[in-house]
Each structure stands twice: as structure tokens, then as C-alpha cells.
Amino acid sequence: MELSNIKVPNHVAIIMDGNGRWAKKRFLPRIAGHKEGMNTVKKITIAASDLGVKVLTLYAFSTENWSRPQSEVSYLMGLPSKFFDTFVPDLIKNNVKVVVLGDVSQLPDNTRIAVRNAINDTSSCTGMILAFALNYGARQDILNAVNYLIEHHQGESVSFQKLSQSLSTGILAPYNDPDLVIRTSGEQRLSNFLSYESAYSELYFTDTKWPDFTAQDLIEAFNDYSSRQRRFGGITEENE
Image 1: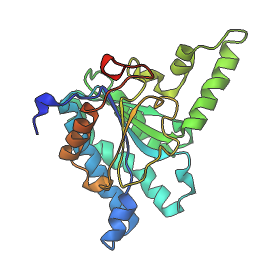
Image 2: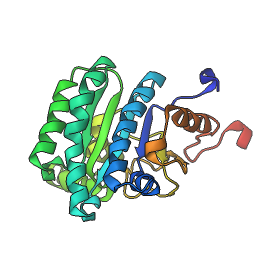
Image 3: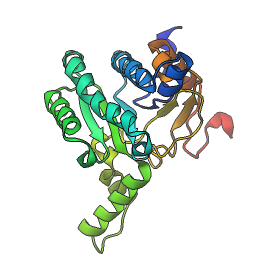
Image 4: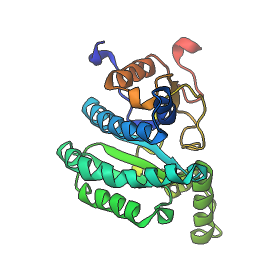
């Protein structure tokens, strides 16, 4: 596949689905899938950075994931420490900056410390932004933004710009909205992920489970994206 013919999206968002099913297929515990999924995060982060992506947003833990078995939640909460302890040097080497979307105040202390350290350690990086959606839900994020605007902008009309700036993704400007949303493992829904920001995003669904997702799979998603015409509700001359 000729990379020169591929249009690389500025902002790619990924719903990393299928860790549990990947493990079940191999008669392994679900946490084995999450562990392997963490390795995939490392590979795809470097691949996206090398391809020229400006922002990579990963749906790591949703506000609904708290309802999972406590043992699984506890394991997921321990992943950031393991992940960042081994990967931050590579992130710095590749000039990748870490940011977080969502309400981290509700995360366990060790998780918050690991996240904070990763953000601080990569704060001087000027390359791709790696945004982790942790304890994130689009509806809650919109509600938080509305309440913030009510409290701090009373009597003022609310514009789309003000609302966008007040969402968690405001820190990603000017790439707040994903150009391409990828979901692995065959499901075809957003699952409360970047609902506002994805109003005009291109959606790409693949049956490949997240632990099996490779740089080549990412390139194939970009290739599919390159073949689409983004009109944002308008028309082009050839579509008149």
C-alpha cells in the first residue's frame, strides 16, 4: 500500500473494543486481554505518531465501566501505572505529549498519580498529543460544560465555540473534533464517546479485536478515510 496516496487524519479517536473477547477466545481471563491491549496501545501510538497524526484519542475507561466486576475494575485502574512506567521514555523519545479527558478526581490515588506524572513528564513534548479518555462519558462531559457555562457566563449567550472550549476536548484545540473515529471488534456505535465532537467525523468499524489491531490495520483505516468526501452538509461540484 502506497503511503504517499493516503490522507492522514489530524485527529484520530479509537474505541479500543474486544479485549475481553480476545481473551475468552483463547480461554484466558479477561485481564489477559487488557494486558495485551496495553501493548497494542504502545504500538499504535508510535505508528500514529510516525504517520503524522496530530492527536490520538483513546477510549480507555468510560463512566459506565465502573459497573464491571470489581476485580476487573481494579486491574484496569492499575494499568496506567504499569503502562506509563515502561512507556513514558518512549513517548518522550517520540516527542508525544500525554493529556487526559474525563473526571480523574474519582480515580484511585495510584492511578491519578501515574496519570499526573505522565502528563508532567511529557509536558514539554511538541509532537503528537496522546489523549486518554479516563472516567469519560460524553453526556457527563456535556453536562459539566453546560454547568460551567451557567456558573461562569451568566447572562451571556452560549456559542458553539464557548461550548467546545468548555468540554474536556477543549485542550486539544484546534483539533477538538476527530476526523476519524475507529471502533474495533465489530460493534457499530459510539458508546457515549465524543458524541458532540463526532457530529461530522468519519466512522470506521473493523471486526479485528483491539489486541490484534496493528499498524497495518491503522493504515487500512486511513486508506478507507482517504477515499471519502467530507462535505460537512454542503456539496462539491461533482455532487451538484
